[in-house]
Image 1 (tube, one colour):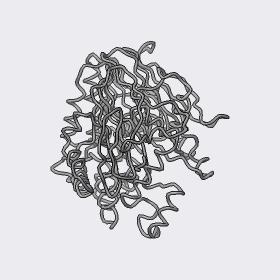
Image 2 (cartoon, rainbow, N blue to C red; image 1 turned 180 degrees about the vertical axis):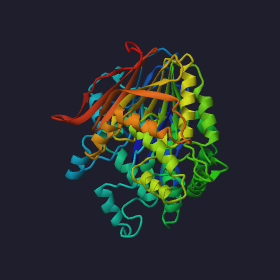
Image 3 (tube, one colour; image 1 turned 30 degrees about the horizontal axis):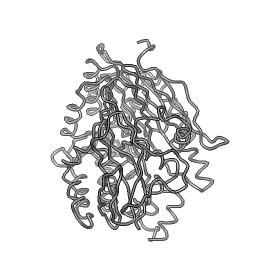
Image 4 (cartoon, rainbow, N blue to C red; image 1 turned 60 degrees about the vertical axis):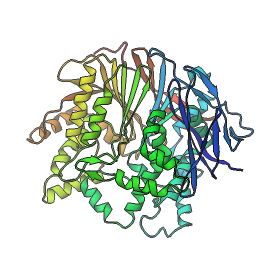
Length: 543
């Protein structure tokens, strides 16, 4: 009989539909709530995305997962609460609770790794959920990048890699192919509490650099160097194929899945769909006249809340003197989908839009310096790669375009516009102001890591990044360059920086919103969370 290897992962949920993702050990029919879907195959691995429609709005449906008729979830004897699908109510004035964060290493049995990475914030949140009433459970979870670390593998994975190939040759103990990527996802998603959390709370995802490799698409120089290796093409292809399977398709609504040509081809293949997805991956990573071959950005609506997630990694344009965080075609899609009838716009970006001022100014100056063709330009490029100077401020034209979009939305009827980010291994909230009055409150909300470590020497550097006297000096120096225009936005830190593993909770009640940051730690009964001061984003905050 077939068995369940991974999942179920509850993905897209709205008021009347839901999708659930699973991986099985053999081809089979996967049945959830009476809806059966046959698995599709990629390189000997078997997957299904079960689409449920005609659900009751505002309902809670307990479910199990059956493979060829046999129940495989929940697991026998497990005392965790029943997994359930909670559809959104109709209308836009209900309370809404969204979790977000990024950068999650797998849980490890190695004592040194466990000490280094600390307590998994997602596991801690799940531990608390099992003791709470269902009404207190979050409505959505957004993972903003680095779900797996292809370039920084755990000790257990390194030993496994050494058992299947010669790790003395590049890429060493980094992952090299589809099979090794599959192991990363199993390692990250199969632990008991996190697996139950994913089966119970709808999850949206987007990749960042470590899902592929550190500094992925930092610059054209970076790409030229990596593409000269004999292993990169296979690595990037495997990264995109597994991302499509494990992360991307679950971001799509049932209607979008029905229109998705690649999804239709893969699920109708009737055999190994590897050639289909390999060809797709090769197209997805190429540039064509300033555009990419696919769009990973997506939109979700939760009543009066709109989530617009931007791909800030694969969609970058770097060739022929172009430098854009997102190609023109995708940016036009983002701008179009930012318009709508909602009270709160959430822009998911793995990379922060507003960073500590000192870091932001250094990145903008570095971008200009890298354009030089002499030794100074080469030195600036080395600094860019070594110091990870590749966030929104290092793509100033794109950053300014995003700023103009946010300002335009904030001039309308929305109550808040919040950019949700991770990546930088600390937590902070900053409020934005513009060169003219706006109606909405605008914030950068950054939460990272969920489960990782930051070198202690980085902590004072992050704090220094918010020091206004130094930022003022750099701003005056920056504006001496005729290639750097004055910033169209200013911002003030209103919380943080905080360090350590953490998860953020955005609470929406009508037109009011607040964000709560909770840090993870070990307690006498398992992982626990400690709340930090909450930040009121609307009511009670003076301008």
